[in-house]
Length: 473
Ligand SMILES: [Fe+2]
Ligand SMILES: [Fe+2]
Image 1: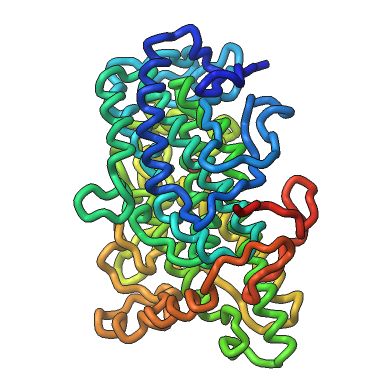
Image 2: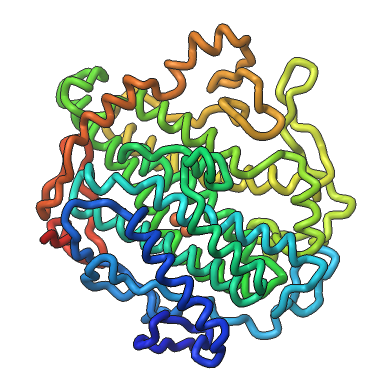
């Protein structure tokens, strides 16, 4: 059982009290983090008190304490899941050996890189979502935005702890740099492209949390398999928090579709913009955009880097230990989608090199289940429309399909046809302006919801839907 000294400036279950050097390093990083939060954290006119979940330990009773927190007094802590006794490396060349409690010299640079890339996404998403508080559809939704953002901040803490504790001077420099890059900044952008896109409206936020936070889930799962045990334990605890972010995504999207379908049924038309809701074709275009951008996050289909991370024991597969094979993959093959001889075909590749593709396939299966939930809402209203995922090669900027012009149905076309069709497949400037026009101001009165979204089916932590989730000054 892990316990936490709540009087500590940095709540933690890693015994910071007994490591003065580390504690001092983190206490020096903390003010810079708070400066970053004030500059880039959720913008809202009044400084609200928010009904938030705060982790005070990692066990069942402690990881989800609910109460009002006055921003920015949230207490970001460092929490690792409890160690698994006798844990052994589950895959790669070191399979069967005890896991590492320190960083082996040969893997130091690669591990640091994995941690920095993961760490960079956490503050990036806060920056991307910064202005959404001004246009929230309800106090319930504003509360969820704050919840996600404070936890992304905590995930940054989680990665910074690893950098400070295990990587010495260059780790400290990387921790500093994590506060210096900015999403979308031309000179010092965040590392991954999807984290430099804007999240300009709440439909984009729900798409982002449905899809891009789900990419995070799969990355965290594969890092949770790592032979570097502190990284594994860190990621395992982050996953418990991440589930709420994806919950906000899928329930946000189903609430949008529910409201649209109510209006469609009431007025007997799919032409619903004049009623102030999001028409399903626009919803589909947002999905096309966010899905394709998120697929790029998994990297090249065939990658020697991915192979090296696996054989080295740094990054495993999704649910590695549950897979029945030799967990070394030296002779295994995996089917990878290719454009070959005028058609998309699955072509066998060395499984070690195809690990990005495999993780992307696992991700897509998870997303498809969510799309099924959305379509059940549509069918429940007997509306004749099916939300679909675009073809994997559609609108890609990374990997084998980058530079190809492919429709959402998977037809390969020329550049002229792409230009003519693009407005039908991706949100146009006017689509975005329309969605934005639905959100002129923040709605925060308890129990009130914007017209374009249905209320949730239940409140947070068993509270009623009209609970006062945010208190404004
Ligand atoms: Fe996160
Ligand atoms: Fe997240």
